[in-house]
Length: 415
Image (tube, rainbow, N blue to C red):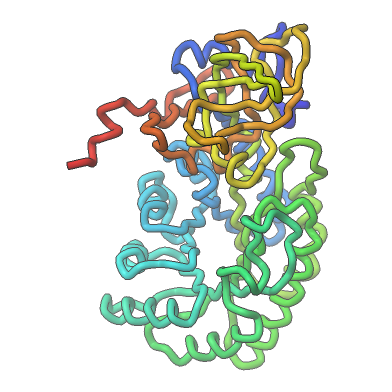
Protein backbone atom coordinates (compact mmCIF):
# COMPACT_ATOMS: atom_id res chain seq x y z
CA UNK A 1 0.00 0.00 0.00
CA UNK A 2 1.19 3.52 -0.84
CA UNK A 3 -1.20 6.14 0.45
CA UNK A 4 -0.23 9.10 -1.72
CA UNK A 5 0.15 9.46 -5.50
CA UNK A 6 3.45 11.29 -4.96
CA UNK A 7 5.18 8.07 -3.81
CA UNK A 8 5.34 5.43 -6.53
CA UNK A 9 7.62 2.71 -7.83
CA UNK A 10 9.21 3.29 -11.24
CA UNK A 11 11.13 0.39 -12.71
CA UNK A 12 11.33 -1.21 -9.28
CA UNK A 13 12.58 1.90 -7.50
CA UNK A 14 10.60 4.15 -5.15
CA UNK A 15 10.22 7.76 -6.25
CA UNK A 16 8.81 10.88 -4.63
CA UNK A 17 7.08 12.77 -7.44
CA UNK A 18 9.73 12.50 -10.19
CA UNK A 19 12.82 12.07 -8.03
CA UNK A 20 14.43 8.81 -6.93
CA UNK A 21 14.61 8.35 -3.17
CA UNK A 22 17.80 6.35 -3.65
CA UNK A 23 19.38 9.35 -5.40
CA UNK A 24 18.40 11.63 -2.52
CA UNK A 25 19.87 9.23 0.04
CA UNK A 26 23.12 9.07 -1.91
CA UNK A 27 23.36 12.87 -2.08
CA UNK A 28 22.21 13.82 1.42
CA UNK A 29 22.71 10.70 3.51
CA UNK A 30 20.36 9.02 5.96
CA UNK A 31 18.31 9.30 8.08
CA UNK A 32 16.63 11.77 5.75
CA UNK A 33 13.21 13.38 5.72
CA UNK A 34 11.80 13.89 2.22
CA UNK A 35 8.63 15.85 1.47
CA UNK A 36 6.39 16.12 -1.57
CA UNK A 37 5.42 19.72 -2.28
CA UNK A 38 2.60 18.61 -4.56
CA UNK A 39 0.99 16.53 -1.82
CA UNK A 40 0.89 19.29 0.80
CA UNK A 41 -0.28 21.93 -1.68
CA UNK A 42 -3.07 19.63 -2.87
CA UNK A 43 -4.19 18.96 0.71
CA UNK A 44 -4.37 22.68 1.47
CA UNK A 45 -6.35 23.27 -1.73
CA UNK A 46 -8.78 20.52 -0.73
CA UNK A 47 -9.69 22.48 2.42
CA UNK A 48 -10.19 25.70 0.47
CA UNK A 49 -12.35 23.89 -2.10
CA UNK A 50 -14.44 21.98 0.44
CA UNK A 51 -15.23 25.01 2.60
CA UNK A 52 -15.17 27.67 -0.15
CA UNK A 53 -18.64 29.05 0.57
CA UNK A 54 -17.44 30.10 4.02
CA UNK A 55 -14.29 31.87 2.74
CA UNK A 56 -12.25 30.02 5.37
CA UNK A 57 -9.01 31.12 6.96
CA UNK A 58 -6.83 28.01 6.97
CA UNK A 59 -4.30 28.38 9.80
CA UNK A 60 -1.73 25.65 9.29
CA UNK A 61 -0.79 23.98 12.59
CA UNK A 62 2.92 24.74 12.71
CA UNK A 63 3.58 22.09 15.37
CA UNK A 64 2.98 19.37 12.78
CA UNK A 65 6.04 20.37 10.76
CA UNK A 66 7.74 23.66 11.50
CA UNK A 67 10.32 23.85 8.70
CA UNK A 68 10.43 27.42 7.36
CA UNK A 69 10.17 26.38 3.73
CA UNK A 70 7.05 24.31 4.39
CA UNK A 71 5.38 27.15 6.30
CA UNK A 72 6.38 29.55 3.51
CA UNK A 73 5.07 27.21 0.80
CA UNK A 74 1.65 27.11 2.46
CA UNK A 75 1.62 30.83 3.26
CA UNK A 76 2.24 31.62 -0.41
CA UNK A 77 -1.02 29.78 -1.11
CA UNK A 78 -3.06 31.73 1.41
CA UNK A 79 -2.53 29.78 4.64
CA UNK A 80 -2.12 31.40 8.01
CA UNK A 81 -0.55 29.79 11.06
CA UNK A 82 -1.83 28.13 14.23
CA UNK A 83 1.01 28.52 16.74
CA UNK A 84 1.58 27.28 20.29
CA UNK A 85 4.81 29.02 21.31
CA UNK A 86 6.91 32.11 20.84
CA UNK A 87 9.30 30.06 18.75
CA UNK A 88 6.52 29.06 16.37
CA UNK A 89 5.44 32.71 16.15
CA UNK A 90 9.02 33.60 15.23
CA UNK A 91 9.03 30.91 12.55
CA UNK A 92 5.70 32.06 11.11
CA UNK A 93 6.93 35.64 10.86
CA UNK A 94 10.19 34.55 9.22
CA UNK A 95 8.16 32.50 6.73
CA UNK A 96 6.14 35.62 5.78
CA UNK A 97 2.82 34.57 7.29
CA UNK A 98 0.71 37.77 7.62
CA UNK A 99 0.24 38.57 11.31
CA UNK A 100 -3.52 38.87 10.85
CA UNK A 101 -3.55 35.20 9.82
CA UNK A 102 -1.91 33.95 13.04
CA UNK A 103 -3.79 32.46 15.99
CA UNK A 104 -1.98 31.62 19.22
CA UNK A 105 -3.12 28.50 21.11
CA UNK A 106 -1.70 26.56 24.06
CA UNK A 107 -2.41 26.28 27.77
CA UNK A 108 0.83 27.82 29.06
CA UNK A 109 1.58 31.12 27.32
CA UNK A 110 4.22 33.20 29.10
CA UNK A 111 4.35 37.00 29.58
CA UNK A 112 7.19 37.18 27.08
CA UNK A 113 5.24 35.22 24.46
CA UNK A 114 2.07 37.26 24.98
CA UNK A 115 4.02 40.51 24.66
CA UNK A 116 5.73 39.24 21.50
CA UNK A 117 2.39 38.31 19.92
CA UNK A 118 0.78 41.62 20.88
CA UNK A 119 3.66 43.52 19.30
CA UNK A 120 3.23 41.50 16.11
CA UNK A 121 -0.53 42.28 16.04
CA UNK A 122 -1.66 38.68 15.57
CA UNK A 123 -5.29 37.91 14.77
CA UNK A 124 -6.11 36.52 18.22
CA UNK A 125 -5.13 34.46 21.23
CA UNK A 126 -7.06 31.26 21.94
CA UNK A 127 -7.49 31.59 25.72
CA UNK A 128 -7.62 28.34 27.71
CA UNK A 129 -8.25 29.44 31.32
CA UNK A 130 -9.38 32.30 33.55
CA UNK A 131 -5.83 32.92 34.86
CA UNK A 132 -4.59 33.16 31.28
CA UNK A 133 -7.27 35.75 30.52
CA UNK A 134 -6.08 37.79 33.49
CA UNK A 135 -2.46 37.58 32.39
CA UNK A 136 -3.22 38.58 28.80
CA UNK A 137 -5.27 41.52 30.05
CA UNK A 138 -2.45 42.65 32.35
CA UNK A 139 0.23 42.38 29.65
CA UNK A 140 -2.01 44.20 27.16
CA UNK A 141 -2.58 46.99 29.66
CA UNK A 142 1.17 47.37 30.20
CA UNK A 143 1.69 47.51 26.44
CA UNK A 144 -1.13 50.00 25.88
CA UNK A 145 -2.94 47.56 23.61
CA UNK A 146 -6.23 45.68 23.41
CA UNK A 147 -5.65 41.94 23.09
CA UNK A 148 -7.91 40.13 20.58
CA UNK A 149 -9.06 36.80 21.99
CA UNK A 150 -11.22 33.75 21.50
CA UNK A 151 -11.95 31.28 24.27
CA UNK A 152 -11.01 27.68 23.61
CA UNK A 153 -14.07 25.86 24.89
CA UNK A 154 -13.90 22.19 25.81
CA UNK A 155 -17.15 20.59 24.59
CA UNK A 156 -16.62 17.34 26.55
CA UNK A 157 -16.98 15.22 23.41
CA UNK A 158 -14.96 12.04 22.94
CA UNK A 159 -12.98 12.38 19.68
CA UNK A 160 -12.41 8.60 19.50
CA UNK A 161 -8.66 8.84 19.08
CA UNK A 162 -5.50 8.00 21.05
CA UNK A 163 -5.74 9.42 24.60
CA UNK A 164 -2.42 11.28 24.23
CA UNK A 165 -3.80 13.30 21.30
CA UNK A 166 -7.35 13.63 22.58
CA UNK A 167 -8.17 17.13 23.84
CA UNK A 168 -11.96 17.46 23.87
CA UNK A 169 -12.86 15.81 27.17
CA UNK A 170 -13.04 17.47 30.58
CA UNK A 171 -10.34 15.23 32.05
CA UNK A 172 -7.66 16.72 29.79
CA UNK A 173 -5.79 19.98 30.35
CA UNK A 174 -7.13 21.80 27.32
CA UNK A 175 -9.79 24.48 27.10
CA UNK A 176 -12.51 25.93 29.29
CA UNK A 177 -15.47 23.81 30.40
CA UNK A 178 -18.54 24.59 28.33
CA UNK A 179 -20.55 25.60 31.38
CA UNK A 180 -17.88 28.14 32.44
CA UNK A 181 -17.54 29.82 29.06
CA UNK A 182 -20.51 32.27 29.25
CA UNK A 183 -19.22 33.90 32.44
CA UNK A 184 -15.74 34.30 30.96
CA UNK A 185 -17.16 35.91 27.82
CA UNK A 186 -19.10 38.29 30.07
CA UNK A 187 -15.95 39.05 32.03
CA UNK A 188 -14.04 39.76 28.82
CA UNK A 189 -16.82 42.08 27.64
CA UNK A 190 -16.23 44.24 30.74
CA UNK A 191 -12.44 44.29 30.33
CA UNK A 192 -11.05 47.30 28.42
CA UNK A 193 -7.80 45.49 27.62
CA UNK A 194 -9.20 42.46 25.79
CA UNK A 195 -11.69 42.05 22.97
CA UNK A 196 -13.50 38.74 22.47
CA UNK A 197 -13.64 38.13 18.73
CA UNK A 198 -14.27 34.43 18.46
CA UNK A 199 -15.07 30.96 19.72
CA UNK A 200 -12.49 28.20 19.39
CA UNK A 201 -12.56 24.44 19.89
CA UNK A 202 -10.14 21.62 19.14
CA UNK A 203 -11.14 18.14 20.23
CA UNK A 204 -8.17 16.01 19.21
CA UNK A 205 -5.85 14.77 16.50
CA UNK A 206 -5.90 11.91 13.98
CA UNK A 207 -9.71 11.84 13.92
CA UNK A 208 -11.06 9.21 11.54
CA UNK A 209 -14.70 9.69 12.58
CA UNK A 210 -16.05 13.18 11.93
CA UNK A 211 -19.26 12.84 13.96
CA UNK A 212 -17.48 14.22 17.07
CA UNK A 213 -16.88 17.42 15.07
CA UNK A 214 -20.61 17.74 14.50
CA UNK A 215 -21.46 16.93 18.12
CA UNK A 216 -19.02 19.58 19.33
CA UNK A 217 -20.22 22.13 16.82
CA UNK A 218 -23.83 21.72 17.95
CA UNK A 219 -22.73 22.85 21.42
CA UNK A 220 -20.58 25.64 20.03
CA UNK A 221 -23.31 27.16 17.87
CA UNK A 222 -25.82 26.96 20.68
CA UNK A 223 -23.46 28.94 22.93
CA UNK A 224 -22.69 31.50 20.21
CA UNK A 225 -26.41 32.15 19.76
CA UNK A 226 -26.91 32.56 23.51
CA UNK A 227 -24.03 35.05 23.70
CA UNK A 228 -25.50 37.07 20.84
CA UNK A 229 -28.66 37.49 22.86
CA UNK A 230 -26.44 39.17 25.47
CA UNK A 231 -24.94 41.48 22.81
CA UNK A 232 -21.68 39.49 22.73
CA UNK A 233 -21.41 39.12 18.98
CA UNK A 234 -18.52 36.89 17.94
CA UNK A 235 -16.92 37.27 14.53
CA UNK A 236 -14.90 34.06 14.21
CA UNK A 237 -15.66 30.38 14.71
CA UNK A 238 -12.45 28.37 14.90
CA UNK A 239 -13.18 24.64 14.75
CA UNK A 240 -9.56 23.57 15.10
CA UNK A 241 -7.93 20.79 13.13
CA UNK A 242 -7.38 17.13 13.81
CA UNK A 243 -8.63 15.41 10.64
CA UNK A 244 -6.77 12.12 10.36
CA UNK A 245 -4.66 10.61 7.62
CA UNK A 246 -4.18 7.07 6.42
CA UNK A 247 -1.18 5.45 8.09
CA UNK A 248 -2.19 1.87 7.36
CA UNK A 249 -5.74 0.72 6.63
CA UNK A 250 -7.76 3.51 8.27
CA UNK A 251 -10.87 4.75 6.51
CA UNK A 252 -10.31 8.51 6.58
CA UNK A 253 -13.01 11.07 5.75
CA UNK A 254 -12.23 13.66 3.12
CA UNK A 255 -12.32 17.42 3.59
CA UNK A 256 -15.42 17.45 1.40
CA UNK A 257 -17.23 14.95 3.62
CA UNK A 258 -16.31 17.00 6.66
CA UNK A 259 -17.62 20.20 5.07
CA UNK A 260 -20.87 18.55 3.99
CA UNK A 261 -21.53 17.26 7.52
CA UNK A 262 -20.79 20.60 9.20
CA UNK A 263 -22.27 23.02 6.64
CA UNK A 264 -25.72 23.51 8.24
CA UNK A 265 -24.19 24.34 11.60
CA UNK A 266 -21.54 26.61 10.10
CA UNK A 267 -24.24 28.55 8.29
CA UNK A 268 -26.24 28.81 11.50
CA UNK A 269 -23.23 30.25 13.34
CA UNK A 270 -23.00 33.29 11.01
CA UNK A 271 -19.27 33.47 11.77
CA UNK A 272 -16.08 33.64 9.71
CA UNK A 273 -14.69 30.10 9.67
CA UNK A 274 -11.15 29.29 10.83
CA UNK A 275 -9.62 25.82 10.45
CA UNK A 276 -6.32 24.62 11.93
CA UNK A 277 -5.20 21.54 9.97
CA UNK A 278 -1.68 20.20 10.38
CA UNK A 279 -1.29 16.44 10.03
CA UNK A 280 -3.80 16.28 7.16
CA UNK A 281 -1.72 18.84 5.23
CA UNK A 282 1.78 17.45 5.67
CA UNK A 283 1.47 13.96 7.20
CA UNK A 284 1.35 11.90 4.03
CA UNK A 285 3.57 14.38 2.21
CA UNK A 286 6.67 13.03 3.97
CA UNK A 287 8.79 9.92 4.32
CA UNK A 288 11.73 9.12 6.54
CA UNK A 289 14.50 7.36 4.64
CA UNK A 290 16.69 5.02 6.63
CA UNK A 291 19.50 2.62 5.75
CA UNK A 292 19.72 -0.97 6.90
CA UNK A 293 22.74 -1.59 9.12
CA UNK A 294 22.35 -5.19 10.22
CA UNK A 295 19.96 -8.12 10.42
CA UNK A 296 20.13 -9.68 13.89
CA UNK A 297 18.54 -13.00 14.80
CA UNK A 298 17.93 -14.15 18.38
CA UNK A 299 16.06 -17.14 19.73
CA UNK A 300 12.98 -14.96 20.17
CA UNK A 301 13.10 -12.29 17.48
CA UNK A 302 14.37 -11.13 14.12
CA UNK A 303 15.62 -7.55 14.26
CA UNK A 304 16.18 -5.23 11.34
CA UNK A 305 18.61 -2.64 12.70
CA UNK A 306 18.49 0.65 10.79
CA UNK A 307 20.23 4.01 11.16
CA UNK A 308 17.03 5.93 12.07
CA UNK A 309 15.90 5.79 15.67
CA UNK A 310 13.34 7.01 18.19
CA UNK A 311 15.11 10.37 18.32
CA UNK A 312 14.36 10.79 14.59
CA UNK A 313 10.77 9.51 14.69
CA UNK A 314 9.27 9.39 18.17
CA UNK A 315 5.68 8.44 17.31
CA UNK A 316 6.07 4.62 17.40
CA UNK A 317 7.80 4.70 20.81
CA UNK A 318 5.58 7.45 22.20
CA UNK A 319 2.15 6.39 20.92
CA UNK A 320 2.69 2.89 19.63
CA UNK A 321 1.95 4.52 16.27
CA UNK A 322 1.96 2.53 13.05
CA UNK A 323 3.90 3.74 10.00
CA UNK A 324 3.76 1.78 6.76
CA UNK A 325 7.22 0.83 5.44
CA UNK A 326 8.49 0.05 1.98
CA UNK A 327 11.87 -1.02 0.60
CA UNK A 328 13.18 1.68 -1.71
CA UNK A 329 14.13 -1.00 -4.22
CA UNK A 330 11.54 -3.68 -4.87
CA UNK A 331 12.82 -7.14 -4.13
CA UNK A 332 11.77 -10.76 -4.31
CA UNK A 333 13.67 -11.58 -1.12
CA UNK A 334 12.06 -13.78 1.49
CA UNK A 335 9.49 -11.98 3.64
CA UNK A 336 9.99 -12.34 7.39
CA UNK A 337 8.60 -10.79 10.56
CA UNK A 338 10.94 -8.17 12.03
CA UNK A 339 11.14 -5.61 14.77
CA UNK A 340 12.60 -2.56 13.03
CA UNK A 341 14.88 -0.92 15.58
CA UNK A 342 17.43 1.85 15.78
CA UNK A 343 20.84 2.34 17.43
CA UNK A 344 19.60 4.15 20.56
CA UNK A 345 20.34 2.53 23.91
CA UNK A 346 16.68 1.97 24.88
CA UNK A 347 14.45 -1.08 24.49
CA UNK A 348 11.76 1.41 23.48
CA UNK A 349 13.77 2.42 20.42
CA UNK A 350 11.76 0.93 17.59
CA UNK A 351 10.07 2.09 14.39
CA UNK A 352 7.91 -1.02 14.03
CA UNK A 353 7.09 -4.21 15.89
CA UNK A 354 6.37 -7.60 14.32
CA UNK A 355 6.36 -6.17 10.81
CA UNK A 356 6.38 -8.31 7.67
CA UNK A 357 9.21 -7.08 5.43
CA UNK A 358 11.52 -8.62 2.86
CA UNK A 359 14.94 -9.63 4.16
CA UNK A 360 17.13 -6.59 3.56
CA UNK A 361 20.90 -6.50 3.24
CA UNK A 362 23.25 -3.99 4.81
CA UNK A 363 23.02 -0.75 2.81
CA UNK A 364 19.46 -1.35 1.59
CA UNK A 365 17.09 1.60 2.05
CA UNK A 366 13.73 1.58 3.78
CA UNK A 367 11.09 4.32 3.45
CA UNK A 368 8.91 5.03 6.49
CA UNK A 369 5.69 6.57 5.18
CA UNK A 370 3.35 9.08 6.79
CA UNK A 371 6.31 10.85 8.42
CA UNK A 372 5.63 14.41 7.29
CA UNK A 373 3.80 15.36 10.51
CA UNK A 374 5.23 15.03 14.01
CA UNK A 375 8.38 13.50 12.56
CA UNK A 376 11.29 15.91 12.44
CA UNK A 377 9.43 18.42 14.59
CA UNK A 378 9.45 15.95 17.52
CA UNK A 379 13.02 14.78 16.94
CA UNK A 380 15.82 15.26 19.44
CA UNK A 381 19.54 14.84 20.03
CA UNK A 382 19.10 11.94 22.46
CA UNK A 383 22.27 9.81 22.63
CA UNK A 384 23.99 12.88 21.11
CA UNK A 385 22.67 11.91 17.70
CA UNK A 386 22.64 14.53 15.00
CA UNK A 387 19.20 15.43 13.72
CA UNK A 388 18.30 14.46 10.16
CA UNK A 389 18.41 16.60 7.05
CA UNK A 390 15.20 17.58 5.24
CA UNK A 391 14.56 17.77 1.49
CA UNK A 392 11.59 19.23 -0.40
CA UNK A 393 10.74 17.75 -3.81
CA UNK A 394 8.83 19.68 -6.46
CA UNK A 395 8.27 17.55 -9.56
CA UNK A 396 11.78 16.91 -10.97
CA UNK A 397 13.42 19.51 -8.72
CA UNK A 398 14.48 19.17 -5.12
CA UNK A 399 16.17 21.34 -2.53
CA UNK A 400 17.80 20.86 0.86
CA UNK A 401 15.60 22.75 3.32
CA UNK A 402 17.52 21.76 6.46
CA UNK A 403 21.09 20.53 6.56
CA UNK A 404 22.12 17.67 8.78
CA UNK A 405 23.61 18.84 12.07
CA UNK A 406 27.35 18.61 12.56
CA UNK A 407 29.04 17.35 15.70
CA UNK A 408 30.19 20.91 16.47
CA UNK A 409 26.55 22.06 16.31
CA UNK A 410 25.63 19.47 18.93
CA UNK A 411 27.62 21.38 21.55
CA UNK A 412 27.48 24.95 20.25
CA UNK A 413 25.17 26.16 23.04
CA UNK A 414 27.14 24.60 25.86
CA UNK A 415 29.57 26.52 28.10
